[in-house]
Length: 397
Image 1 (cartoon, helix red, strand yellow):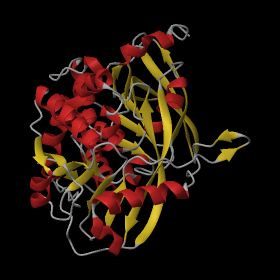
Image 2 (tube, one colour):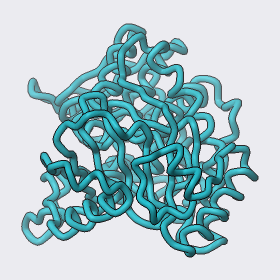
Image 3 (cartoon, rainbow, N blue to C red):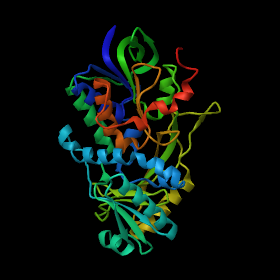
Image 4 (cartoon, rainbow, N blue to C red):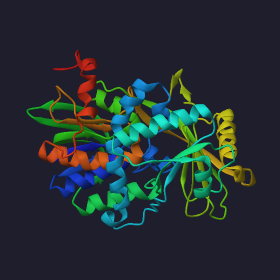
């Protein structure tokens, strides 16, 4: 039976980046991906690097906004990491960090923006609060309705089709084994080791690992059940839009203070438009089928594009090229799940939150935690221990 220090479940950004950091620290690593590397959300998202508090984290009242603001130090750490990532991985990732704007078009949004700005300042994030006039000077493409905007110079975007494969190549160079079309179909703990059965095209085989890292993203909950663990990670179907290529005019990441909108223009000139609009799971035998590509909701496409055209009037001149859907994993409290699951020695999880923006940070922290037992950066706020109560009946099984 093959033996490894760590078995990673999931070949998305978090999984491949964790393989890199763990192998870099001397661990023997096997990554098992049931499909292809970067096939799911890690390769289907829009590549936004959004470090300001998103609208979904600040629109549900002061108490919840204060709770969600705890992620700001993690966002700051991510901004530093992304700035040097192409150098670290020795690969072009199309990282562009020319700043991000979150615009307010109503008095209510201005109030929300001011509260967000105060929370960010309190947690050490140096966002700037701009008047509408100042925002249009910085970003002439914005509409005259903009009353104010929050600006953070480190925001931007990267190419999600390049990042995860670059991490996978770097992990292999460090000695990690990465297997595609390799599904973990059973998992149990025996004498301080985890025994996993892997299903491949050639058949089944068993491997032994000292530790498990669940990096299965939207499928983290179903993957955890193999180990008799409940995790509150829920699959959410989303959609994205992209226009035809246009001359460069949109250098920033642009968001709206209380609406589902994000925009950025990539190197080829295409403009990506999203912001968290839902698509719809397809059904099989009366149940949502998480393995099928979610279906578009036409009305959501229209509403998303209308928001884009309202904020950036020049968008009315550009044709929609295509739309696509994908699935992300969201935790019950929308904060990340990072660390060892209490009562299940050696079983770790890294999921939830803004998986693309924060994925490299999750991976670096997991590499540190799983090889040394601690992290220099305090991640106790994101520990699975906060959901320990849901596993009261599962332990010892």
